[in-house]
Structure formats: C-alpha cells, structure tokens
Length: 597
Image 1: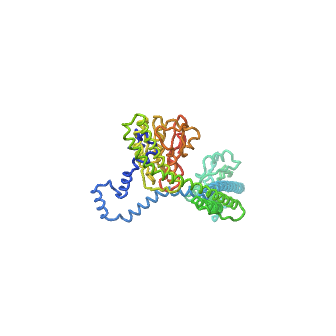
Image 2 (image 1 turned 90 degrees about the vertical axis):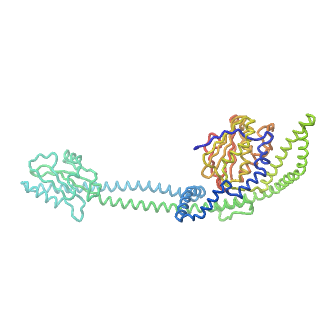
Image 3 (image 1 turned 90 degrees about the horizontal axis):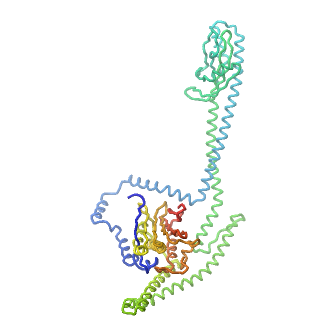
C-alpha cells in the first residue's frame, strides 16, 4: 500500500473515565511495565530460534570488506550533509550575514563590471572605427594621386601600377600587419579594360559582404563602414571594413576595401575581462572578510549574552555579563545585568512561595493516600453489597464509588503536577513509531467512541514516523487529546493526522464539535479550566489532563498547541523533535485548516 493510510476505527474509554483515567489503569499497569522490561531484556524477541542461529552463522562468515565500510560511511555522510548545512545556516547569524553580504557584493561587482566592460568595449570599438576611417581616407587619397600621375595605358602597365600601389602605399609593413587591402572591379564599371583583382594578405574579396559592396557601388563618393567577423589564421575575429572607390585611368572605377581585424582590441578586452574577474573575486572575499569582522564585533557580545541567559535559565542566577566601554553593546550589557538582578530577586521570592505551595500539595497528596486506601476498601464492600440495600441507598453507593474514582484520579494528577513543579520529571527516551502509538490509543478509546457515535479516522504516512520520545508520556498526551475530541465532538467524525518532516513528527487531533470561542485556545491548558461555564462533564475528569499533557510536551522540547472555531470544531497539534534534545523550527502539519505548516 502506498500513500497515506486511512483507518476508520470506532474508539475506547469507559464513561466514568476521562483522559486522566487512563494514567491509573490500562496499558500503563504492571503488566505493561513487565512487558516493557521484557522487550528491553530480549532485544529481538520476534525472531525464531532458526533465525537467531542464522545470525550466529553470519557472525562467523567474516567482517565486511574495508571498501564496503568506507562506501557505506560515505553514503551516510552524504545524506547527512544537507541536514547539517541547513542546521548550521539556521544556527549561525555570522554565517548568514557573511554569506548574504558576499552574495550581494558579488551581484553588485558583476553588474558594475558588466557595465564597465561594455563601456570599455564600446570605446575601443569606436576608437578603432574612427582610426580606420581616417587611415582609409588618407590611403585612398594617396592611391588616387598615384593613379592620376600615372602614364600607364596598356593592361600590363596598369596591372603593374596597381601592384606598385598595393606594395608601396596600401600594404602595411610586415612587422605591423594592422590591415588587409582588397582591390576589385566596381559593380558599375563598364570599361573594356579589366585589371586583375589584388589582395595584400590572406583575405580576399570574399571577406566583403555583398551588402557593403552594393553600398560602395551606389555611393562611390563616400566611404562605407561595416563591422563584421573575419577568419584570420583559423581564428574568427571582429573586424572593421572600410570601402572606398578610386578611378583608374582607362580602366574605370575600382573598389578599395581596407580590412582591420581587431586583434589588439580582443586581446585588450580579454586582459580586462580577466582583470575584472580576478578583481571581483578579490573584492568579494574582502567584503566577506569585512562583514565577518564587523559581524564578529556585534555577534560576540550577543553570543555572550545568550550564554549568560542560558546559564540564568539553568538556575545559575549569579551569572552576569562583562561590561566594557560606553557604546550600545555596553548599554545592552548593563541593562541585561540590571534585568538579571531584578529577576534574581523576584525569582527568589517566588521560589520561597512555590516551595511552600509544592510542599503543601505534595504533603497533602501523600497524606491522603492512607485514608483514601481505607475509604476505597470500605466503598468497595458497600458497592458490592448494594443489591441488598434500599434503592436510594444503592444509588448513593454507586455515586460514592464513582466520585471516589474521580478523587483518586485527581490525587494521581496532583502528584504528577507536583513532580513537574519540583523539576523531578525525567524522560526515558527510545525510538518509537508515533503512528503505532496513535493506533493503540485509538483502539483503547473505541468503547467511548461507539457510545458517543463518533468515527475516529487515522491519516498516517505509509512509512514509519519515528522519534526519540518517552512512549508512556506521549501515549498519555495522545490519550487526553483523543478522548477530549470524542467527548466534545457531539457524535461527529474525529480525524487524526500523522506526518513526519525533516526533523520533527506531528500529530493533529481534529474534531467537528462545538469548537472554541475566541481566546479560549490560550486557556485550554490552564489547570482546572473548562470551556463549559457550568463546569459539568459527562464522563468526569479532573481538569488537569491538558495541563499535564502540555508539561509532557515541553519535557520533550515539543509543542502542544490548540485551535478552534465556534461551530466548526477544534484542532490540537502535538509536534515532537525526531532527535531527543533538538530544538523545533517548524511543524510538518498546519495548526488550523487554512494555514500552511
């Protein structure tokens, strides 16, 4: 089966037991504890003897190869790397500030470098075009002067004169091959004397585009300029081509094309680009270093304040921050120390009052155990003999037994509350599949759900939803939430959603009953608070169940939150970290139906 599994279950809880009643009996009893101890002694009780013997044979088969161990370790580390990076990113303000500053610096340097690169490239190109136009104009004028002074008449003499012009005037020196010259017959030349086309290097008339040749032929009195790509020595280069016209005696009009490859400009731009890249990298690193230094000056005092605050929260009330200077951070340290002094004074006063209150609750709870045991024995005898009593007396015996059950549950909850108040509550964590715990709670609540007419549906992922928790306490939380949802669901369906995220597991218990009024979601976890003004409850209860559940959730570093709307229903969300002791940063399930998780 793939995807979420929806399990419709009709659920358990006797009418004379509330959410708290499960803490005194049921799966939490001695048999459950014995079974738990049995599971811890026999780590794999579900294996048959043959399978265990097979494991022993596997042990004698020899250890895995070193390469397999290294590969397994590498794969495990690769899987943990994204989680470690995300955790480091969330935990380090300095890392976020330095990384963000370097990223923004890189963006600014890239934009600025791109603009400067474009301006420099345009400047080099415009300068090269201007120099090419001036040089081509001067060379064309010299060539025309030479032709005007020439006395050549025959074709051979004219060809020789053209070669002389090409070699003496138009061709650049060999040590500085800055241009190539192409001489070709103009498109509109109708003279019968045809001279041979000449070139001064590797480029010929094919390097000139037909569009440029057409423009030169149509306006012979003006120079025409074109930017194009030419191939020189197998390398494609941008080039400036300047076209002009000379008149050859007896041979008509001939085109002169001066081709200027921009080799030096390309080399210059490559050097500038490399310099920009290197300067950008160095500047980004320098900006990151500056951000690291500045952030360190700010983060270090804040980190010291956080460490002092943690020591204060751990009970070391004499811890203070070191103050130096007169700047804002020194003012922060001074104010922090003043706040710590005030808190220490008030906490000591409250500790005295709390110690008296805790001792009173603890002493009363323990002292009530002995008379309560005697009363229980007497009530049990009276309750068993009620059939022989007068109907009024028999009914009184039943009421007495029921109220005594509630009194025992209240006493048990008061003892649990006193443990939380005294800081004596501790966790016994182990890996637990929360989905299995939810299904067990739903199965135990089936009788109550059937009496109330509610259908309890579990929506859980296909895979396990494991977390390191104290299963007894988590089961108590879920039992309180499920029973409350059934009690206040008015016979409507109850939905339980289970989901697992990157580092948390969440359970949402949703009913569609009376719901909560505005502001009541903040009061549901208050001790002895009830939403019903008449303070009546059909299945009993002490009013401490949700308070104990909240303390159990906090003991796991988890969240227990409530949401409700009158006439719509209510939702209770339990979020627990997958690793014991981790801090939660979010929940995989939304608290209200309209919000994102």
